[in-house]
Image 1 (cartoon, rainbow, N blue to C red):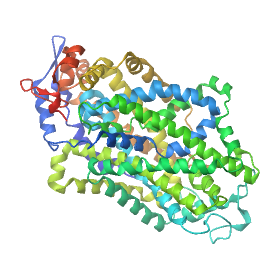
Image 2 (cartoon, helix red, strand yellow; image 1 turned 90 degrees about the vertical axis):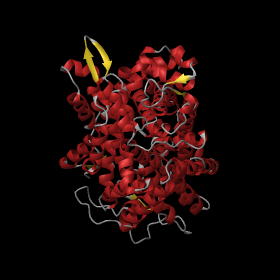
Image 3 (cartoon, helix red, strand yellow; image 1 turned 60 degrees about the vertical axis):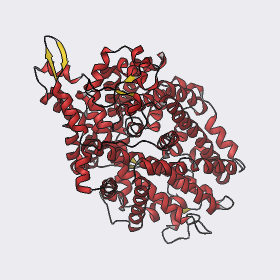
Image 4 (cartoon, rainbow, N blue to C red; image 1 turned 45 degrees about the vertical axis):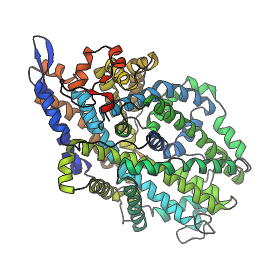
Length: 623
């Protein structure tokens, strides 16, 4: 796709902002070089002098909830739960929520709010050696948004198709159906048959080709809907957080009304109780399997959206003393409660379908796009007022997808504005045009996903970005912040913002438990790695696997490149360069000389940015 070539020139410019050569080693003592302050100040002058803030704290909270509560809560968690022990899976899920999810989200909120920078420059100041982690998070978010909007385009297709008295996937009497192997219901173990909803998705919506090596023609209907999806995204974010903050009042809240309505309807259907019991019935023996605990940690990690850079970016628009601990608890607990409630909604419908078609629940349950675009649409066919329920469901998917898309696009925009905002505005004149340019590039890179072979490309890209790359980035981010930057410094910045240090629980999680869990997930992902597949039968050719690893490297490669860049421009021997490259820049390093009690009680505080020592600012002047 050429993602690296399209926009990495900008990120190289961002990397060059921080020079580890600003720290010298003299007589065994590391001292800050005065030139580093000049470089940082020059860089800050590149960005607009005033950084916007959320109009209300609720807007930030809703934006984070909207980002965390996405399609994965609907199509991933319920399937993972029943496959990993049913109700027993809730135990490791909740344990991992408190040991991994809450501490790491609090960590990212702290970094973003204190630094008031996107992930690129925040990581560069925290740990120059691993500043490439910040660039990598921006790249992976940008890659995700190029194909995530394709799911929104599919949801729009189904939404518009629902406005007719007879749903188009209801029977096999359509021009796209193959009658000899089409069934107006679920096929059970008859592998030669396809359900009408499956044929609608494969043969009408996608017009799917035989594989990734057969791209075929562009699906013009999907291309038009992809354009519409990007227009919607642009209109919601073109004013930055000022417009996004207003939109999330609807997109983050309205899906809950639909979920509640669907649940009330579903539980009244025959067989719904069996589906819910299948979902919740605990199988305690599963708790003895290590993989179940790894699955729980991975689900928490991916669902909240840690290491995508979005949470850091959104927190950077907070006021300096915003209560991020409260926001952390609200976002994480809401996300997990939504996942469990969505499981009840989904499996009540699956139980109903199993009852109607006289099949075991296990033959119907699945995950991924197949659940929301094949299995669940089949449930609407036999429901009363089926077009209404179908339209509501796909409108809910639209809202869930848009919230996540807003945050992923905002990461790129924030990083560009932080790095070279004034230069870009000299050319583009207005920030709205920069947002338009980002959306346009992402749209063009997403076009291969709407060809006839696009679903294979989509699955390949998703596997190698959201599965393979993410855990590498997460590991190095946690190492950079928790171990190199250090829990002591992290405690100090939290104390400065909130007026009190984090309790011992967070310190232990940051120092030992969370990094260990991330390391275990990473090792498990490597040991159990399997090549990308589509469905149960299609395997990708070798050249496609190479292409997939290229997508992975588009983000991962920035970690070693950033380290090499820092060491190359540092001064001294290799050992001296290594020592200087793990020292935080400007005021972050000077915090080591201040006791925590002083930070908590002083009316004067350190700025989130570089401030000359003779001109201190009060906390009320920041943000």
